[in-house]
Length: 246
Ligand code: NDP
Image 1 (cartoon, rainbow, N blue to C red):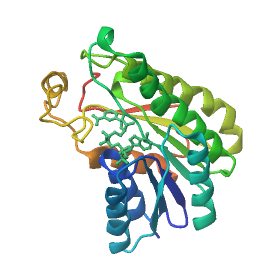
Image 2 (image 1 turned 90 degrees about the vertical axis):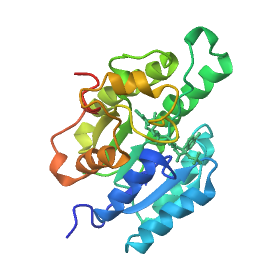
Image 3 (image 1 turned 30 degrees about the horizontal axis):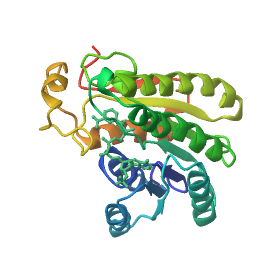
């Protein structure tokens, strides 16, 4: 039996990048997987098809993380489709890299709405259905602990909020047998943070491994935290950053 057989996972922002890799990996480990996306329906359906081609079960749900009603409906649809919810991966997130003093209020609101408010709303909705053995996993960021590069000030602050949210919530739901952990990637090559992009060189330079990470390297850690072998890990910030914060 695979590690996640008969488990149901919801991965927010699962249509591209790190979320897509997490969805595919959890499905490969045996879970039925729901993904949300904001805009890119064809990318989302590509992830569902890839999982189904490999014999897994998946659905895609359009739910913008800034729309609380849509997020709650996505959680309900996951449970209605697959019968339960065991693993929530709060992956949907965004960054708007630029100097802090040039950042507009609208840009700050957007980063806060998706990265913090969206995580709160999704987690609250998911907890209504989670039973003992449940797993809540944030995709925070290594810059939620140390900020070694410029251009990410509001973003880093939101990921710091995600870190302390993880720690606090772990104490509220631990007695129910639910764990809450924060996976903190370093620079990972995605549309959001391309390894060839304008902001890439200083990020690569501060890693010990002198390279960007791959989405699968983050998904591997998330799969471990989602699985049965992580049962005594909670309230933890687990960094997968090529040594960026070493
Ligand atoms: P991408 O931009 O490559 O992918 C983002 C995914 O999230 C897409 O599936 C996108 O859907 C979805 N998404 C974006 N906005 C929303 C929204 N408002 N509501 C719902 N879904 C949304 O990002 P990454 O894969 O790079 O990042 C994923 C997570 O990892 C984020 O939380 C990010 O902060 C974090 N992270 C990334 C790092 C990196 O270097 N890449 C480093 C550290 C953390 P759609 O296709 O519809 O737009």
